[in-house]
Length: 315
Image (tube, rainbow, N blue to C red):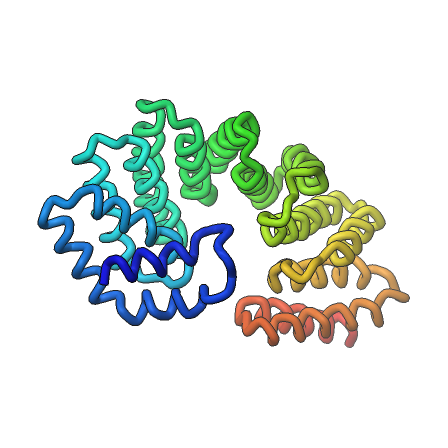
């Protein structure tokens, strides 16, 4: 059972062929009680290398469905096995897995922060720069709503470390966290520094095929945040240009949320002009259709709220 779970988990790793991934994820979820029992048995038998190998194979499955107790236990068993084997690199990786898992739920961000800090300590002790950078990025995400200065500082350090390692995914994610944190605090001019770096990075040779989905999403969010900053400054023509650029650059891998918010942003700019009403209405319809197709309730609510606002203003 554990061998089958490890095989299914490897099918969900980044770069693995897409064929069969959904079936592998369904099998892991359906048989979770069985393979988790097998993992517990291996841990009880002090089969530490086996436990660590299994937990490493299963780590990517955590992104396919949320089950707080299940993944907490998997990553904790992996961490304990790594500690028994005195493998600080593996221990740091499992702590980062746990931090990433906790970040899904805002109520568990403090737990994410604790795990991220521990990951940095382990990684620094063994000189693992990549795991230390992931730990700092996860720490930044954990405090992005409660301590924005600390979040930006941690994300900045993570981005610098990832960049020095030639790690495009980490660099993109760290720069994006810094930009979003600053934008959400209304510090748009500071955010633009990171947004400019993101644009350069996304348009360069680092944007390879494996990162296509991340790059498309990052570019869309970059345009969204930049457009919002320009609109706040009253630079309506510049904001319109950026929003249109974002919509034009949307690829098939971009998220529905990015498309919806870009449509809403551009519609908001266009409504300031009498001749922009019809274009704005068309954008709102597009946003609503996109949200419905994606079954994104939060986006649908935002679009419906915008439509109500337009109807009130038009009276």
